[in-house]
Amino acid sequence: CSNCGHKVKKPLSQRMHNCPVCHTSLCRDLNAAIIIRNRGKHDLYKQAQKMSSLKSL
Image (tube, rainbow, N blue to C red; front, top):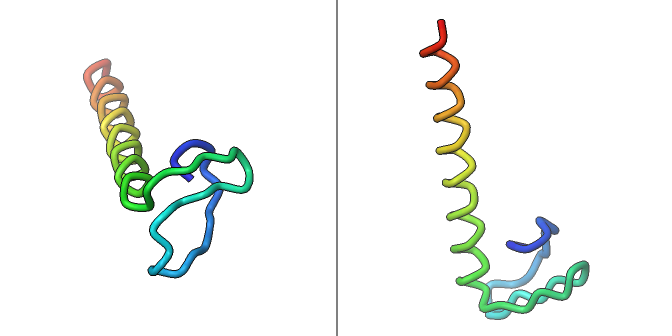
């Protein structure tokens, strides 16, 4: 789930994501896109932290 992180197994034919934990309801593709975007942001943040710590050496 892009909102709470709960993993919801579903067949490919199911086009909606409905989270039983936080009750988020989104188009399956939109939910996946938000998760991918959030992972990218997290990776960029980690990379920036790493570069910042290298500059202080």
